[in-house]
Length: 130
Image 1: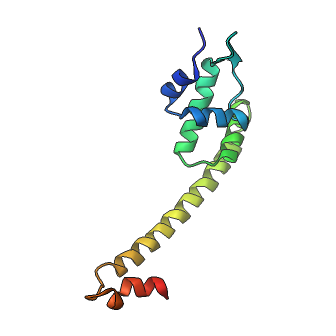
Image 2 (image 1 turned 180 degrees about the vertical axis):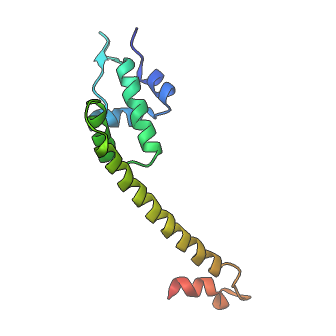
């Protein structure tokens, strides 16, 4: 297979070109081969790996968790408990954030529609100021 340009890889994965370059710089994506004109040429392994990273980011995993999951994926014979642990930790964090957002929603609902006639009487401004 002829290699893909960075633009083609971006289009195939939905990952921004600058993000692809960033992932290369931090080692999430291996550096590709270069053409004689020094253009990047990505292969199927780059496409698979970048798709993996994209899906992980879409699920909210941070870079270090994705790095750990990539290491696990490179050793398919190893037990799955580390991947399960990483996912469980991430799920707990997501659930914590959902609870926090629920409290935020409730506070905003309470503040809504409680204005007076002027800003001087506005309980929203008062609540934020105190």
